[in-house]
Amino acid sequence: MRLMLGFLAFAALSGAASAKPAVPVPAPGPAPVAPPTDPKYILHLDLSTGGSVVIALRPDKAPINVERVRTLARAGFYDNVVFHRVIEGFMAQTGDPKGTGEGGSPLPDVKAEFNDLPHLRGAVSMARPADINGANSQFFIVFMPVLRLDGKYTVIGRATSGMEYVDAIQRGEPPANPSKILHAWMESDGPTAARVPLVIPAPVAAAPAAPSAPTGTGSPVTPTTPAPATAAPAPVPPK
Image (cartoon, rainbow, N blue to C red; front, side):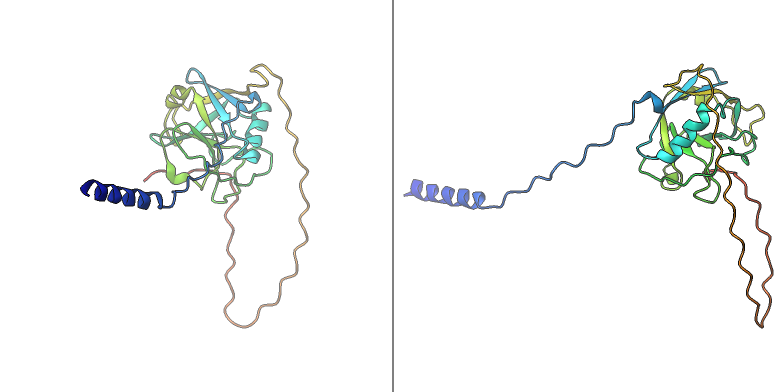
């Protein structure tokens, strides 16, 4: 009798366990997009600090900004351009032919393409002024993770080798003896490829301004002088 009761109890427990609904297995998500290996999007920066930085650009994440940097590199725009703003533990900024942070290329500014690429060590991101769509030619390379910049600056790629030459860039805002990009080139072209001239788009004629409406009674509004438009892209320094 004891064996029978034990068997019945075991059977009841087994039946209860088998009656539980099965836990659904979640379907696998989409595979992450691998960084491009196309030599067309591998940027080399030969630095005055003694070596070359190899950067895998990400046209899958920021196609417009990547194409801008690629176009300027192929035109020789970045050759002999200095790192004009270099902050220890933060980043090294370059891409301004004036070397002041106020210059850019003759091409129009490009729109922001904020993406999910983080500002980790070696990340290459477009510098810009207060206008989020004001990036042009300047970019910066991150020394250390600065995740507070995520979603505020467009990451276009990441250094895959040569960060020791980035670490050796002279610090300063501006540095007393700035390091520079000796030569920028795309792997698909090779270091001795002929420069590809920039194609400058024709300026678009501005529409005539509409006549201003007459003002009514009350205190007049004091006109303000707009600040001069500059291309002084500078990521906010760490506090």
